[in-house]
Image 1 (cartoon, rainbow, N blue to C red):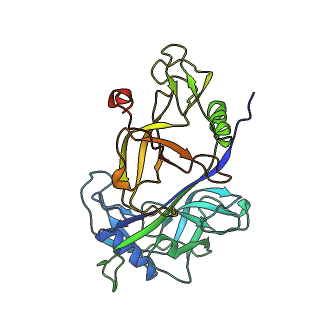
Image 2: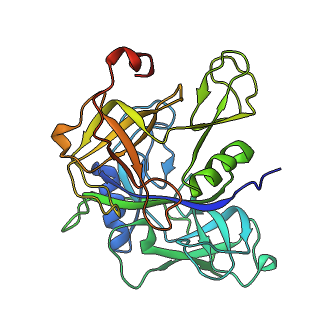
Image 3: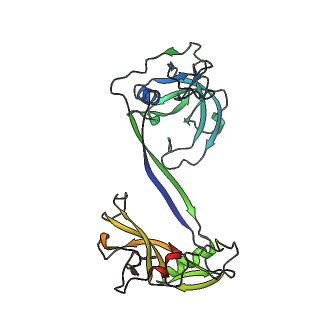
Amino acid sequence: MSEVLTAPLVVEFPFTRSLGPVQSAFLTGLRERTVLGVTASDGRVVVPPTEYDPVTAEEIRELVEVGTGGTVTTWAWNPSPRRGQPLTTPFAWVLVRLDGADTALLHALDAPGPDAVRTGMRVRVRWAAERTGAITDIACFEPDDSTADDGRPAAHSGEFADAVTGITAPARLDYTYSPGRTQSRYLQALKDHRTVGERCPSCRKVYVPPRGACPTCGVATDTQVEVGPRGTVTTFCIVNIKARNLDIEVPYVYAHIALDGADLALHARIGGIPYDRVRMGLRVEPVWTEGGRFPDHYRPTGEPDADYDSYKELI
């Protein structure tokens, strides 16, 4: 039985969005050490504020200022903080109902241990030393011995100098990926500069990359078939936007390539030819870099173009 591969993978991208008047006021307020909520149609004060009523879905804009102290409504202990989380030492995730609010805000509570956290405890905002107009302007919450403020939330115009109108939030997912036995065999063959697919015992089609089952018949595939290395461009697109952290100059071409002997086209970059000369039917072969585990790109072989009828079913 072949080794099943695993690898740590990261999906990361910056998410940029503009802010409406409610979110703009909320984040700008945090920069100024002011916490704002919004009054819903039923009179409840919602914090963080939403742009639309959570019950009626009507637009709401009646902003109010609430307190910076509050009460923990529920919590969970985080013994192993991860990259990008509010604190680097163990802490509690808490839902805090701020004084004057009717809903709870999720954030971190700096506490020495889980025994120091309880539902109903009083906490207070710890502000970040440098504030830019983001939820991280609240560095965390910290325990507070004061009693609840019985005052009602105060109306607020939501107007601040130099209001925050947009944010860029980093999105990141760290996970361990295991391709399974079938694709592990495929990846291990690529390391040896070979491309291996699997044949369906029913329809006899060869699929590359293999999936362990025929996508048409739904039956298991376990017969390995070596294909390529040459193939035919079935269709393609020209990429004009440079991807972050990808050292390839635009424009460049990504194509679907039907390897010789395969019944499913895979996609790969086309190189060694001007982008505006790539065409359907172009015959190509893989180019490997030293130490590469998969082809860096495919380049023209110099053969005559394939006849359309030979690949039309793979478009």
